[in-house]
Image (tube, rainbow, N blue to C red; front, side, top):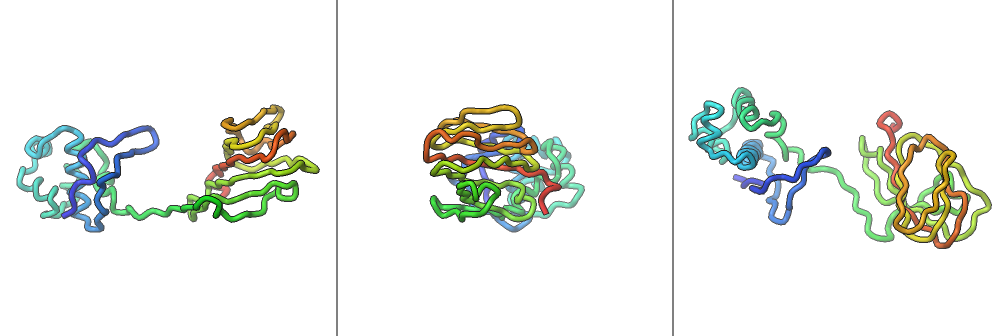
Length: 219
């Protein structure tokens, strides 16, 4: 049997959950283990004892204990009762069954340099990792400018872009607005409006560019 992932309550916000992973056990692929661990974790978060939850959902204490200890399988009806009693969706009781998720780690300096519209204007683009499928909607680049440019390209693309200035300084336009960017400055904007550097002030210029493309734009 796999023990509960954590008896500490999760930190929740509008976008998800987080918890201290210091002693998080290796995930199990056995369904009874996963359901049992989730039931125990959710019950503990609500401050309910085994007896209290069993009484709340009209299930015997012995059966609930067997479920939490992966000694009994749950019928669909029992899963529904547990979800109602714990005030969660049924799918929450299966959390962890798909624990293997794709991730891309890019060690410092190892990102591949790629061509983009601004390459011919002395923009160097280093890719900081990419995922497949639906996660291709996010593009993360380290952009470096090391010398004056003969021209200033105007970029336009679907989605939202975020720029974080790391080094140097420049003026950056978005639509009819112009912004002075220095280290620590951030700019987030609609990519559909024309945007790009208009004046390079001090070198080298380095900034992080993260673009979130709309789902329909990713093939």
